[in-house]
Image 1 (cartoon, rainbow, N blue to C red):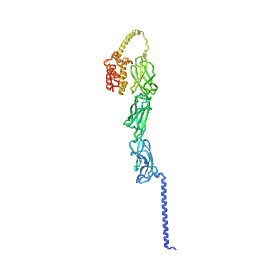
Image 2 (tube, rainbow, N blue to C red):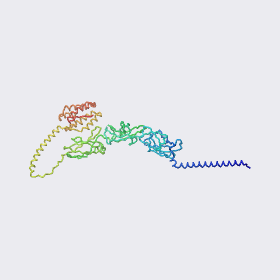
Image 3 (cartoon, helix red, strand yellow):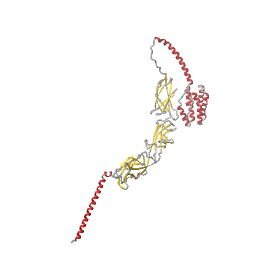
Image 4 (cartoon, rainbow, N blue to C red):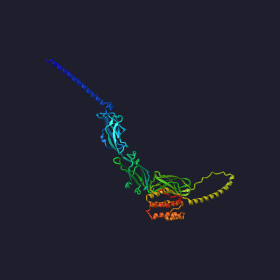
Amino acid sequence: MMSERENVEKNDWGIILIIFLLVLSSFFLFFGNVISTYKINKNNPSYEDNVNLSGSLDFVVNLTNFQLNNTRHYHNSILKIEGRVYEPTSPNNPGSGVNIAIVINSIMDETYSNITDTNGEFEIYYQIPELLNVYSEHKIEADSIDNPDIEPNNYFMINVSANSHIDVSYIDSPYLPGEEFDLTGYLKYNDQNGNGISNAPITYYWTNGTFDWSSDSFSTASTDGSISESLFLPSNPHSAQLFLNLSYMGDFPNINSTNILIGPFDIFHNISCTWNIINETSEGQDYTIRGQIWAKNNPSLKIYNRRANFYYEGEGLIGGTTTDSNGNFTFSYSIPSGTGNRTISVQLVNTAGVFLSNQTLIFITVSNPVLPNPLIITPFQWFFIIGIPIIIGVIAALGIYGYLYYKKEISASRLVNIPLEGKIRNLKILKDSGRIEEALSYLFNAIYVELVAAKFGRKRNANETIRDFAIISVQDFRLDPAKIYPFIQKIEQIIYAQPFKITEEEFYKTIELFSPVYYQLTGYNFVLNF
C-alpha cells in the first residue's frame, strides 16, 4: 500500500505533464498560424506592393547580366538590361513595385523603364541612340525614378560603333571626256538621317567595268561632313559609259567602311541636231527655235540636261536654255531687221574646252506693212492728190539717198562685237592645261579671224596662210600694219618655229600684241583676268 508521500509526488508529476502539454500545444498553434499567414501573403500582390522601402530599410538597384560589361554594340541595337532591387543587409528581402529607369553617363532616360516584380527583378530593353559618341566609353546604371532612398549598386561600361553612309547628288546628263563633274553630298553616320562625319577621307576612281583609272581622294568638310568637289572625267575613256566609285575606309572599330558606285554616265564626243523650225519668216516676227540634240554617230543618245546657247547670224549670242530629258530645246526670239538667208546656230556649253556646234538656215522676208483705213476724199482734197505724191516722192528719194549714205558711212566705221565670254573661258582652259600653243592658235582662229569676218564679211579660206590673211587684212581692209604684222609674226613664230616651247611670259606678250589689233576692230581693249 502506497504511502501518503508517494501519492503527493505522483500528483505533482501529473500536473507538470499537463502544463507541458498545454505549452507545447500553444507553440504548435502559433507556429502554424505564422506559416499560414506567410503563405497567404506571399501569393497576395498587395503585400509586395506595400513593402516599406523607406525609413530604416535601405534598398539598392543591382544590375545582374554582367556579361554586358566592357562589350561593344552598334548604334540602334537593343540591349536587354536586367537587375534586381533588394535590401543589401537582407538580400532575400526584395523591393517590388519600384519604377526603375536606365541611367546613361549619369543622365536618367525615363523613356526606358520597368517596374520590379514580386522578386524585385526588372528587365529594360534599351535601344542605343546615335548620339552616343563612338570614341568614348559609356556608363550604364539603373535607378529608381521616384524614390531617392534607392541607389544604384553597380554599373556596366560599354563601347558603341556606327555604320557609315555616303549620300551624294550630281547632274545626271551625258558628259564629254575630260569634262568637269560636280559632286555634292554628305558622309554620315549609319544612314541618310545620321549626323555628318567630318574630316573623313573619301577615295574615288572612274571605271568602265573592265578598266579602273587611277584613284584619288578628298576629305569631307570639317564642320558637317559635307561633300562639295569638282572632279574631272578621264580624257581617254575606252567605252561609251563610265561609273564613279566612292569609298570610305572607316575607322575600325569605331566606324565601319562604306562604298557606293554611281552611274552609268553616257560619254559622247560630238553633237548633231534635228531642227524643228519654220524655214521662212519675216522681220520683227516672234520666232520659236526648236530642236533635239543627240550624240553624233549615236542617234539613240540624247544630250539631255545640258546647257545650250543660240547664235543668230549678224547678232551673235541671243540666249540659251537647258535641254529636257529627251535632249529637246525650245527658245523664242524676235527676228531683227535684215532679209535673206540667215544662220541659226546651237552651241553646247561645256567645261572640256571643246567647240561643239550645229547650225541651220532660215529665210527672212520683208515684214508686211500695216495698211491705213481708206479715206473719203472731198473735192477740196484733189489738189493734194496731185501735189502730195510729188512732194512725198522727192522727200522719199532724198531720204533714201541720205539713209543709204548714212548706212554706208556707219558700215565703213562700225565696230564689231562677238560673244567673247565663252571664248575667253576656252582660252583660259587651254592655257591652264598647259596647251599654250593651242591657246594662241585659238586666239588667232576663233577670235581674230571671226572679228574680221564679222566686220568685213571676209572669212579665211582654207588655202590661205596666216601671213596671207594678214596681208589681206592690211591691203583690203586698211588695218594698221604697225599693229597687225607684229601680232601675226608672233603667231607664226609660235606655231611654226617654236612648237611646244612657249612659256606663260610669251603667252602674255602675245596677248599684249593682240590688244591694239582688237581695239582697232572693236574699240575696246582686250583684257584677260587670269
